[in-house]
Length: 134
Image (tube, rainbow, N blue to C red; front, side):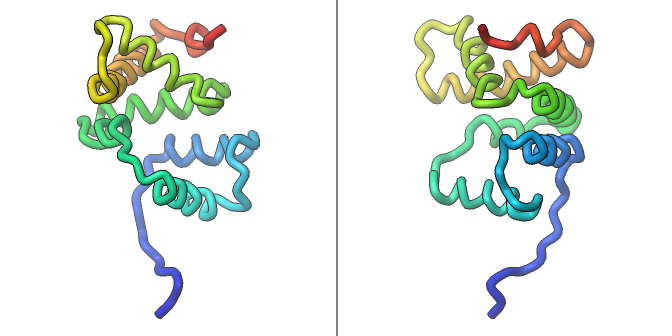
């Protein structure tokens, strides 16, 4: 039996472009795009934890996913996503309206906050440099 099998998957262009951008700027240190996708899957296998934020995004309406993907691509292009800075900001924003939310509540609030932030960015009401944590 072969060690690898070819599979065809559909990757939204902004998600792929964001990954390629992070490879180009050295955020992801993989020798090829294929190695990066495999590396990210291996990372999941090593960590073995659920991804409630990205799972929630996967269940959103495709139009909302598109807005988020475009926003994340722009964040990758600007370097905003480096070192978890964007995720930290999202968690802070999501928790700001809740009193002592637990981990599950935060995981539910973050995707909604991300969509809200992405829609503000899409409308031009929010610039990425406004999100940079100082």
